[in-house]
Image 1 (cartoon, one colour):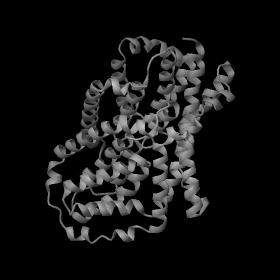
Image 2 (cartoon, one colour):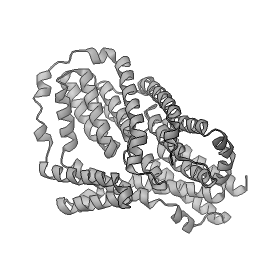
Image 3 (cartoon, one colour):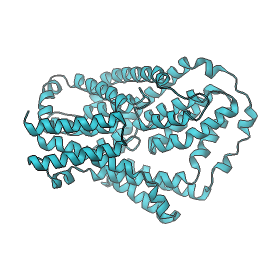
Length: 431
């Protein structure tokens, strides 16, 4: 290794450590790491400001921005709370059905919208329903977080790592559905079985005040039915165009931004308020990490790393897939899955440049980082939010309690997904 490579690696590791400690906000940590990487690169003449600009993935940033605007517009109508109440009433007070229905609702919404927003809006309604029925909200909150993570893996727009992978490959929305949705469904069922076993006592209790649940008025939760219908129609067209992107030669970012523009034009919300609720910190976090990883690339370190694993990929690609899936899962339980994904993207791209068919590696990466986040309460942003909300209840979710459920969920889902990956390896590695 050369001196620039060593220094670039040290800066990247220190950035990861800073992210892990959570002493400062993750966006600040990433911006600091990016600044130090570029400054060091300029001094040592291996990475310059114009290079950093070229490392930015504006396709990813554009797709995220478009979907964030659509989510914010839908959020203002009260649709999420409406969906949660309608779903809860269908359970008629049965705790197990309530968990399954709320989990299914959260998963489906998370397939197409940001899972963080989904749990932020549905979790408070869940707590209210649990208190009304005099049952513990813990199983329901944890299920919503984990199943939202699993649901997000199924589609191109459901999980940030998938967005990143889609923008650097030729995979379409339909490719993600056909390759990942069946895997997500299996993981969804496995997760529910774990919850059924671990929380069998809580889920077998007969809830009280079922009449109170059935008396909830979902109509009042839906503040603006007209705009909700408009935004849902626009969102439906966005999803349809996602499916047709290959035929129409449109990028996901263009489709999302066009949909957001159309919704803004029709709904005419207060622009300053709407734009202020876009998660700019997330976009800055992504942009900064792209610059950090760019430093590794321009130092030559990623090429060196790729050449080190090219032998394994050529001799036994399936083994490399399974290894990446598990490494991604374990890493995502400890740190945010976004930086790990961004770091692995150029490595897989280098393998592709060496003539290796890497389709299966992309799917292994998406599955590993998507399911691995369920292991710990810090494995995904949705998990962190759920734990935070639970602290306002009589029975908060502790770190130990999450590990008791999360680790078995992660291990079992990854085990079954690995088996499916082996069985359908040829399909997963279709270019």
